[in-house]
Length: 113
Image (tube, rainbow, N blue to C red):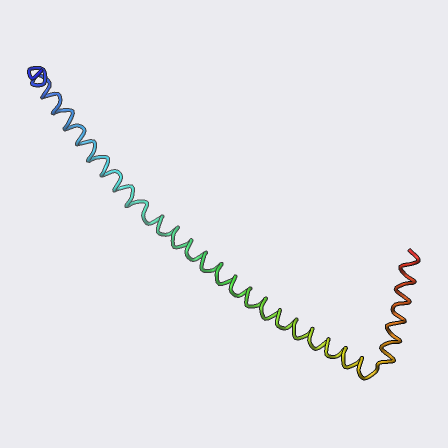
């Protein structure tokens, strides 16, 4: 067997050198592609970061607006409730008369259907 491996050693060496050369060329091609693609990837990454920041900012603004609107609606509810209670306390008979009249109208409109 040692005689056969000696006969093949120039062929093995040539194949080894070719593989090494192809390996080096492949690494060079990969590095070159990475360098040429890097600016595009960087721009895409930067754009994605800006988009995420813009969406987060808009979402935070919307949440703050909704929170403020919710507080305003709560204040209106409290004022209306206080006004109704004050009217009932100040004019109990008129409030009772309005409630009876509304009940009669509502009952009549539902019964006629």
